[in-house]
Image 1 (cartoon, rainbow, N blue to C red):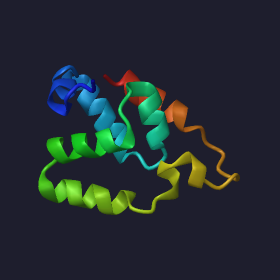
Image 2 (cartoon, rainbow, N blue to C red; image 1 turned 90 degrees about the vertical axis):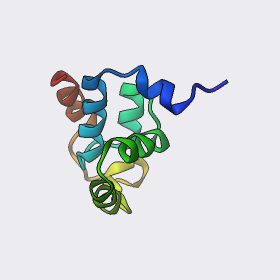
Image 3 (spheres, rainbow, N blue to C red; image 1 turned 120 degrees about the vertical axis):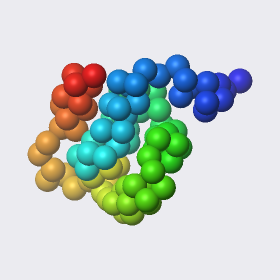
Image 4 (spheres, rainbow, N blue to C red; image 1 turned 180 degrees about the vertical axis):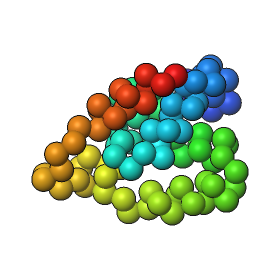
Length: 95
């Protein structure tokens, strides 16, 4: 049985919520990395962002993410040289 969204959200500290939001806004951090670090899938992150952001900020974020190849590892060009896991580690260190 899957835990309800509200319960999962309540289990996060403010620092955890902040870290997920930072990683979600960061263009170079793939949703796969966010899931590896936090256990929150892309759909979960979208729900979290919808819940935590002002409506206009959520719409702006969704528009930025729509079709952004850097947010999905499978869509990235092989020439991309950075490792998004390092970006995610840096973000988690700010908590």
